[in-house]
Image (cartoon, rainbow over all chains, first blue to last red; front, top):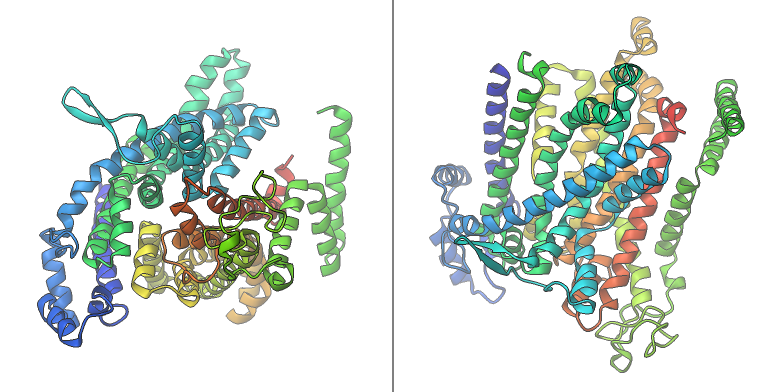
Length: 313
Length: 314
């Protein structure tokens, strides 16, 4: 209990830090208004905007104000959409969660399978394959992979649409059809590589443990040794990796959603950055951090549930 | 593996280990490292490819067949040389403005290598200093530094880098500063961890007990042992930085659009993806090759500089 409480306090402090950072970043150049106006704005217009947004007040007052409205979920209005920035973010979040979840699922299926195969057959072709995929996942940039997939599978083969989110009706739910496959795959490759690498070494480590040797010498069937001893024990460290990876997928979506025009958070952020819509950037950055920090807390929670050594510390 | 081969390998390994024990001069160590590298062909290839890329970056003016900025609208949108409409004049084709893609890739390596090298040097230097302070001072200083470090590491990195880049605007200096500063926490964490581990070692305790001053201990005993893990980390971080720089360029947030860089080329190529795919294929390939070679070399380096791993490695 004390463990969880300390983690909860830590998460809260972290969030406060994020708020401070987000506020600081916008004021880093001294004058946020100069970032927001177009190049042709007259000094009078700039002054008017500064007055309107309250940027002419002392910094500390502004931060206090920012904090109070942030706690109410108010991050200012987007210039471009003329809507509260947080509302826009919340509208876009389902599409991103959907994309990241499918990508994570793909990565787990491919990465863990490859990792188990490689780890349980060291120094074979399968092992080299697992290491190779681990390396490729790390070295192929997501944004390039997306482009290449479009060239191959959309332009040449015509199997998948090259952009957009198309849906079909599933008992009243608008679920994405095959249009999600290319972006999710491109997004998942890095995680696939990481999981393959990680699972491989975890399995190799567990295979050398004494209890596996004991199980083997007792004459247990190979299948049973795997299901009961090896896989179960390799899975514990995987939990923390998967938590971290989901955060990666969320931020990585900025490239993939831009390439595939996927109507999610990453797309919104890229758009907001290019149109200098800084309140929207602020809201996106804060919300992404919130999700990432929440996931971390969740990972710690699951860890405590699975591993009794942590629970009783 | 046959028993015979195993014996041979064992002999080789013990041979290497005995060498290390007998001769500890720098030349002998380098020679030893070189032999380890020669045995691991993947690491060797990685190093050679990476050196080639650095060479390209340094001598871009000589190597590039064309001016990377010269526009030639008559020769624009040419596909690579091996396709039907390609010409041998432009090996990898030309872009929408008739600029030679191959030359632009060569010049683009300058931006990547520069950002990677300067960014890592900055993070490396500052990270070691802060990490040493945290590891040696301990107590409240350590607590504050590590809480801040862990906080920064817990944030969604890419989102914040994009945010900062958007606020600061496009320039090479800004990009180097962004990566140089945001990468410090990783170096701090590793340095501190190593310092805490090393402080438990017998020879450090001995040095403390005979009254050696802290700076002397740091430079004589800690630094040499820190170098291995930190150099390995630097290799991986540099490869990651080259990635992130290209990613920022792809989003239009890195060096100004007039500068040829791999990320900028990808951003331009993306607009013509359906009609002139070669504009985005080859700059990306350059990124992949760079990352791949650095990771191969880094993997080798990690194993080679860590004696505990060396014995385990098959």
